[in-house]
Image (cartoon, rainbow, N blue to C red):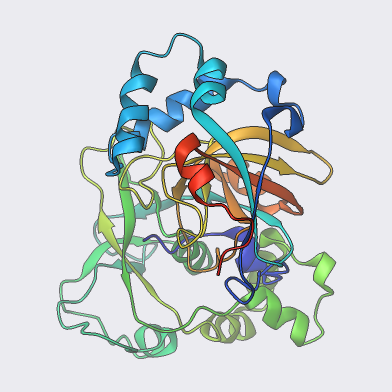
Amino acid sequence: MTVRAWVGPLLGLALGTTNAMAEPLTIRHLDFADLADWAEDDHQAALDAFLVTCGDLDEADWRALCRTARTAGNARDFFELFFKPVLIEDGGPALFTGYFEPELDGALTRDDRFRFPLYRLPPDRGEGPWLTRRQIEEEDALEDQGLEIAWVDDPVELFFLQVQGSGRIRLPGGGTLRVGYGGNNGRDYSSIGAELVARGIYEPHQVSAAVIQNWVRRNPEEGRELLWTNESFVFFRELQDLDARLGPLGAMNRSVTPLRTIAVDPAIIPLGAPVWIEKEGPAPMHRLMVAQDTGSAIKGAQRADIFFGTGSSAGRQAGRIRHGGRLVVLLPIQRAYAMLPERLE
């Protein structure tokens, strides 16, 4: 499971944290005609994303669909012939947020500029809660243990890299190091955006990733204390031989696709399933995605995180997303009908 994400939870407004499983799930079958702008989508782009991970699905019906997908002549016909749109709700509001793959400047050796380390998972990490973020950073609890993967020049961007859970480190001379989620310290994630709101520094509608970064930089001492209120700390691993043209690895250990991959709650939505989203907001998004990632803050039947891509531009786009709407899962037809009656415990 990846831990990233998620600019929305980072902002803290986790406004749409759904009450997953607090109420029985309600299941409603829809028709493709019920999906807003279904006919206008690029179904081939969605099919290409589906093919990235469908070969890893174990169940017989999914395996059969994957074989068919590889030779599908018309992508829209494939989805309409073999899937049924299913609306799954748990009583919680819908919420879409966005995530991305950050790029940081760094080096493989420490110097006066690159002083802030990315750590791999310590071999003695064990189970349960471990050292807090403050203990690791303020007390240099992991120093001189050979756990450093690289060093970067900006502790604020490093914090955001931990929230995202994967990224690229641009090295002197033009090389790039890809890192992914390698584990955590067993401490609960808490939102620094929510903390800024609780302190009366900002109103909820004012908080964004850029606002948080700027405030921490303007107030270095208070900012450091603010970051330490989130006790969760993420460790990384090097991602070897990952094509630079592809996105980071998601929860299915395959590269995720910009604007076609979403993170979902796998307790409700099966990983690898196509999911139709109808995101509201200033720039509505109606398109077929694939559930290929997860996250600790992505809980509930109507909760999704949209992958926007790599770099600062993708980060700005992801940081603006905090909208309602609905998501509809496309399930193999027999599986969809097996989910009836309408209300499940």
